[in-house]
Length: 109
Image (tube, rainbow, N blue to C red; front, side, top):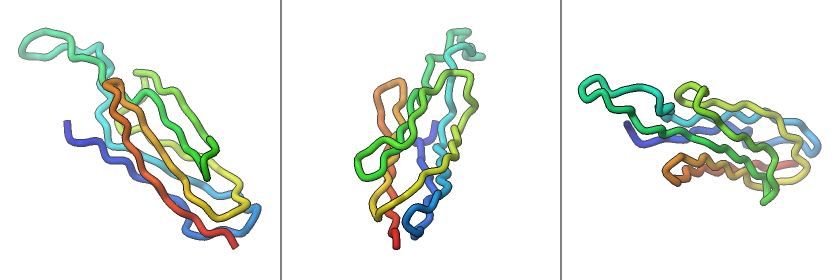
């Protein structure tokens, strides 16, 4: 599997009190642990992104627990009301303990 790559889309600017839309996607195969290797017949170990969290200036604004039934490359879109300039931090946690992170700043007028 190629290295997981997170992508996020956050507006660069917003007005105070504006509700903005955030879009996130991470490239990941999301192996459920229920398929068998065609050559050996062994189960392919489960390897999924099992949690996603979005924070703004240190406060959680969106969080999700992800189950094996989610397709590859999990995509989340959500809305957040911003009152001040700051930084969004996004994190995706993998079954093996890997954490993939991305951050984006927004300027509020």
